[in-house]
Image (cartoon, rainbow, N blue to C red):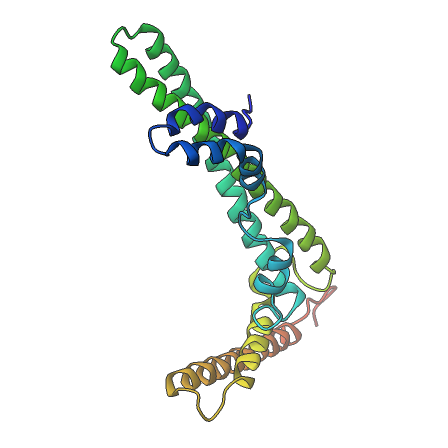
Amino acid sequence: MKKDVKEVIQDEEIHLNNLLDPQDLTDFKGMVDELRDTWTKKQMFRTKTEMEFSVLNDAKYPTNAAKYWQCVREQNTHMENLMQLSFDARKNDIEIKQKEKELEEEKDEFKKELIQVEIDQKIYSKATMQLVAAHRMREVTEWSNFKKIYNDGTFDDKNVDTHQLLSYKKIMKNRQNTLTPGSSQPEVFNVLGQMQSIERIEEERKALGHESKKAISETPKPTYGKQG
């Protein structure tokens, strides 16, 4: 059962009397609705705009394939975090029930007060988990939408390795274009070194493909009928 964070805040008001002076407490009580609104709409994780221009930026992911596979990574991260959060929430619910049982059975008043504090903390944690879960799911959905946008049928969407040489070559070219006479030697060395490696791998793969085709063409064809 979901508990509105406004109720959690209001339940805690009486205890804030121990921390705040009377005027601050009055101000706090007058802002409960505003604070609930702030808590509910605060930004968690990235917005759709941030996903598109910051994460999937054209310099780092210059091809649709590169963007698609980054969407896969991002979506999987949030899915896994959502699953772990679900386990944590289940444990938290059980712990609330355990504490409520302890509270019923406890006779010592001070221990009962401590148990109640623990229950209140766990109820607030539950409300926070529910908010985080909603934002995790929002990201899972947004990344799904981006996957559909970038999966245009021009690349292999089953094996991430297939697109990488082409995509990394474009990434390195973008980085190479940003080099200036003031660029550090390690930076230049890194970019040029990776470009040379990519070009070498391209040539090796072309040669391998050529040799494979040659081997196939030179394979003796089976003959049928009587041999002379």
